[in-house]
Amino acid sequence: MTNTIVVIGGSAAGMGAAGAAKQVDPDARVIVYTELQDVAYSPCGIPYVHGREIDSFDRLILQGKDYYEAQGYEIHYETTVSAVDPAAHTIQVPGEGAVHYDRLIICTGFQYERPDVPGGDLEGLYYVRDIRAAQRWDEVLDTVKRAVVAEAQPIGVEMATALAHRGIETHLVDPHPWAMAEIADPDIMAPVEESWRELGVHIHLNTRIKAFRGTERVRAVETSDGEIPVDMVVVGAKKLPNNQLAAEAGIKLGSTGGIIVDQHMRTSAADVFAAGDCVEVPQGTTRVPVQGLSGSHAYAQGKIAGSGAAGTLRSYSPVYVPWSLVGGKWMVGGVSFGETLAGALGIPFVLGVAEGISRARYYPGFKKIRVKLLAEPGTLKLIGAQLVGGEGVKERCDFLAMAARHGLTLHDIAWMENVYSPAIGALNEPMALAAQNGLATAGRS
Amino acid sequence: MTALFRWVRTNSEKYLLEAQQAELAQRYLGRPPPVGPRTPQVLFWKYLFVPLYRRLPWKVKHLVILAMPGSHRRDWSS
Image (tube, rainbow over all chains, first blue to last red; front, top):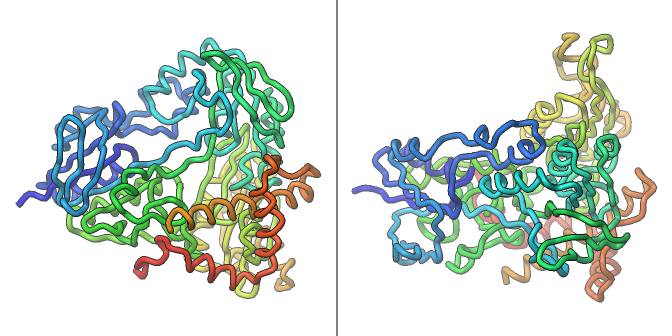
């Protein structure tokens, strides 16, 4: 009998799930519902098209609609699922009625936290998410002289950089003392801030937005530090799990608001899986559930969920969350905990910090890299890291996440082997220098 | 209960982060703490919860955090 697998959501997790389901069971009927006009594109690339580093939105599209049709997927575009009934194994789709599933995969993603201030419903407030909307906004950007980026969360950081590249007078407004203050440490973001100033970004930190002003369209942003006239606002707010559908179906949610899942991405309801920004998964060191990770996490979780829904259970592992992005002229990144998050939670740590360079000191174009390593006192096992540099940040974050996953200590990293080749790597690896300094701080060198 | 746990986590995370941000902003940047509205709720979290939480050893805090419902309490053994 044909296994009918319904996927709600057509982004990274949803399409990862659909693909894995077909791979495991080519005869399965895989139906995808998405509220959007497209699937299989990279929303993470949108800021770089706005910033003109990428010349066209077409480059963000991975596969066209014909491809999925030819592969046998049934994709229902611009279609909202209004309810899930886990007991009856059905979903409700306006216009289609009750649709039966054998296995359901919920990949409903995230929604932005809406600013709780007057004027939040004015026109001219841009939430970066959907490629079609981004294309429309890109035309608007041609007419914009002055913009505010409201909040310096990761998307705000990328958009502030993009608008500055575009030559728009950009004002970044955030209530914290430094950008991305919930994720990154102040010393890591300091070079980014300096480079924003070089790019002409006006930075308003420790500044709260009190209202968006205008009649129909936003014309000014009222802040705790005065009013900024604007042509548009990019809302770079926090991402929240989009879980109303799951909650109404009685599927259990955790303290993060994400759907509770096990290692196979199974929810509390029989035959219902979930993946991506709508779920929470345990962090590797502490087992504390975390939510709202990267597109690569969503895609991998989708693959696990799709495989399980098609009949082959695979396991996802607790996460160590390597992340990295471009802010101004710098790459910043990290793994699990920085000083800010570890300090806030009260996790004890030993800190090792060093500055090094990305290539041999005599090779043209070498860039500075600052590395901070956090290790558990006693065992000196790596529990987190933060980096800022001109190049080579992403690769080091990937390596350090794997190091933390496998319990490597500051001793291991301090005396690690590393590539030395003038054009691509320095004699002294900055991560090793940071670990050596950490050992000295701990009195264990 | 889910709503209660979410409320506790959202608020505790926010105010613990703000307290840590205030210290690091002063230490690294010489800047003031994050800005926000002053409401009775803020006073509770900032002046009662945060100091109390900070006095507990990590092991105790960790046990309390792990006692909350979530994905970590499902099977992740393999």
